[in-house]
Image (tube, one colour):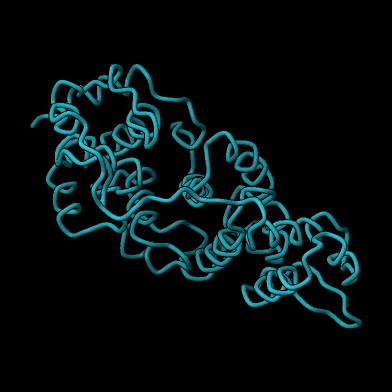
Length: 286
């Protein structure tokens, strides 16, 4: 099945103008965007990405700051350990790669917190590499269009990777990767796919077989209200918004459930997102 031409033609007309896709985007800017975009919508990432790149245009600029500043300026993007990972990446890039984001997949995988997807994405989008860039959107498009399945497996499988690698075109592989990703983000969405607008609807095995329902493990939507994750966010917001260390009483006032609050605070300390100072004061990591 030839999907390349219709998807690439669709992308040429409908792609979003995002700063990390522009020709002037730096490898560092692309790396920052890829980590910020994990499980986070573009609309929330854009202002934070722009602030980060203005404040820290190079890995060296971020590496000179304490990790707590990365957490502070992460804002409310969620999953703030990603901010610590980016800070650790900046230090490693500065120390081990002379301040330049490495170009190869294998070198990128040596950076703290960088997994298969991010390494493949940065090697492709920043340096023009030929890699299977398998994010959730890409996996969903391939599952539907080729395998006739509503959703891909929970974790990436060897057959998925083999299929994606077989589809990499001999030229302009990065454009193909981002085009499939964009199709999944805008058209072949998880909850409400716009099949009538899809450039490969006439070849999509899932659509042609009547959109069979997912028959794998139940796919549960993420909850947030009242969870430990929300509690952690509330406590972290107190630390992030304060000009300096805060007393325990300020954290106590941020969340009423004592057991949940103490559990969340212990988690922040364990994850390195907060520090306990003298006299029962807390602060972002230094």
